[in-house]
Length: 353
Figure 1 (cartoon, rainbow, N blue to C red):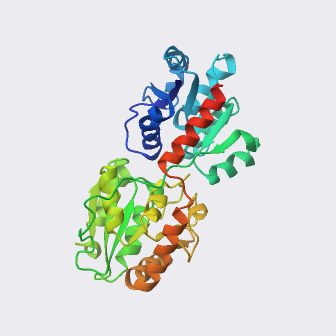
Figure 2: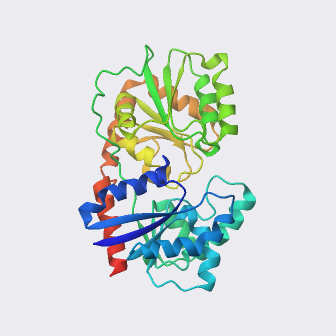
Figure 3: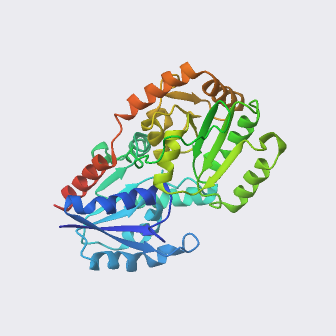
């Protein structure tokens, strides 16, 4: 049996994209004669977790790991240790974000980027979540053969119980947005754009952790409280993957104007459910959906364009159906979670061997 020591930060059961990816792989491990053992760095202020690098690596090795897999969220913490020590086990990284991370202030981003890259250059293989990340690493001089795409699956969960649930609430369409309440997800621009639509056009549903960034969440709630959005937006908070599956299948359009999505699992899930997607031409979305074919992909910050895109898809049923069919077809080229797991474990088994 292949034993993988996965190094991460804090609770491995958190509900964010990278953590959910790892949970999926852990659940599938038995089908691939493998086992994942999680070892976590403590959640200390940056960069203090680096003080525990040696201990965390030793714990992973004592677990019997044949290969140690470094989550990109902790890559920076290993850099100082790897400069001065040797490690007698193959090292690989599972990369869900660009060097430097995606939700930090500029100084931390710059410092962390240097440390992240120092760690990645000592990895024998980088498993990255998207084509956008391949571009990032090859532009930094990493050999293409060391960078392997192992993208998230498109299938979120069976949509049992989906039939008959009315998300439109008497309006012409139901718009769905899935993302934690952090600035890069673009909730405030989304609400500003949505507020410009006539009240009878659509109902907007927000799914995601609404306390992920308390300061930003306060701004979002203040915007939601204004009269131009009264009764038009439903806040669901964090929900199970089964519930997300139901919402995908009951909505009409998916919209997420995110500025930085290293992959954008939710776009792929929405497209697989037959939803046209609306978002900025940023991050990995241009690699998933083409403007006018599977959705509407707009210049970042174009609030008028965002309003127009949502309005057209909400009111033009024929156009919406055309893009929905395109989204579903395109999503068939994305992997399922079963296919992702097969690629994931094959890459790590090859490295261990």
